[in-house]
Image 1 (cartoon, rainbow, N blue to C red):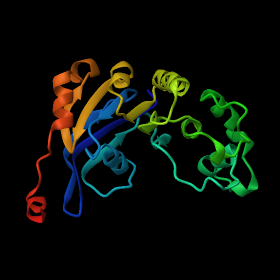
Image 2 (tube, helix red, strand yellow):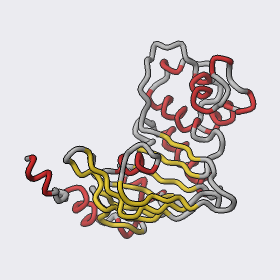
Image 3 (cartoon, rainbow, N blue to C red):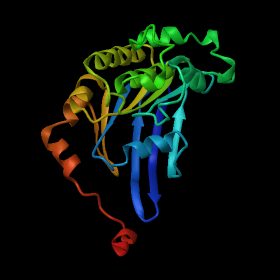
Image 4 (cartoon, helix red, strand yellow):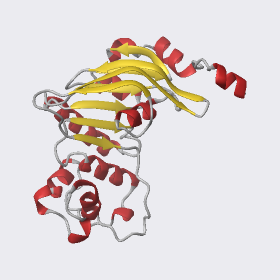
Length: 242
């Protein structure tokens, strides 16, 4: 395995008087495709932001890397906000995200952006204006940037939201390739059918962990109903505020 195991131990996250995560504990095994599912506002994206160091939290989040130390971490968001009128090509966008050399000096040819674009079905579109792409095409470019360089851990926040059928097929192929390479994949997803088919393990999260295990076992109609209908227990501070 090239990817790390990830430990979340009693992770709490509170914004103002609102509890976002409440004692979340789970383990992501190295080299697996681990899905997080749950309702909107259940804390899935917040847990990812805590992992990436973008949200203050209590508790422990630890990456256990194999071998000599930390590897490459990649992140694919749901979407990216930008001025679509900018004269920014797909290759320019990748250069901004992926290379150390300033993008205004031009793309670093050693980064091989074309190969990454080929893998996501965007061959020949490196010189297209990024703002002129469809939502699904922009999402494919976001997938491409996560492959430069090859990741050891990839964090996916609902990456299939804007993809069409062809894009979904490409995503499935990429997921299989990453898994075969020993990459650890932490994947937030709302499409439970895809999770059943593609994930190694699934965690149901609604402020706290409601279930964790093999997808075919965990995603029963009863558990899914409980996950999406449960009203998380409010803290005393929240009750007073309301």
